[in-house]
Length: 284
Image (cartoon, rainbow, N blue to C red):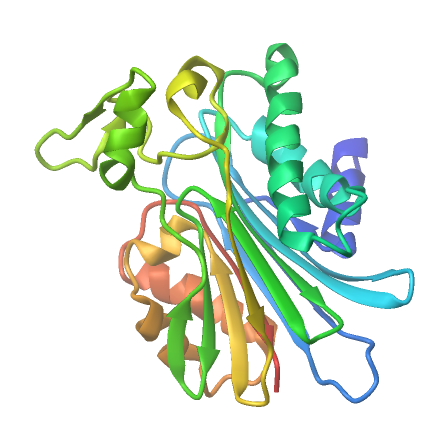
């Protein structure tokens, strides 16, 4: 086994994932809770290497347990997404205000991480990545942040609720044009920043950064007794499934890993050609 293969296996075991097909699971150690998670990734039909990365793990920090979940969807190479997998949560948790002003700390960490990525452009390349992150604090408080079009959806009483915002160029045209950029859309295509990138916010993308934002939208959601599950997934899933369809398709699947696998397989059956990565957190 090569050193690269050993490192890959260590990442999967630690709750990180990316390859042609990765899968994993875990559970909370909080007494009195039955919170579990599972993830599954499948490479799309493109010729380039897999560009999605996942973080899914529970971590004890001081006297608290944090559930750390994230989807990083790279473009024009996977190096930025890989960097985010290794550094974004670390940067968030190192913010002095994380425990007192969590939302502001996450916003600051997102922006500072993007600055570090731009500084390392020689090593990380010209590509970028979207991100959706979810931090579950003691099984009670969920803080979701995102830039780009990966998505977080929560299910309560069988009803899907989108917690993240899809940062589509057409929706942020005014902001992009104020920065000197433009939004174009050719027949049969999606709207793009400067005719190139299909999201209005992202990490990296040094050549477009003057016209892009890395400011995340942040939302807090309390976990109630009627909360059933949380789904995080890249746009490879959401291009072919609605929020409610995704929730409906896994409500009867008790195992979170099986649920994540089912969603990726369903997306493939619906002819999704993009990389597909999915995390399911079950609160049953």
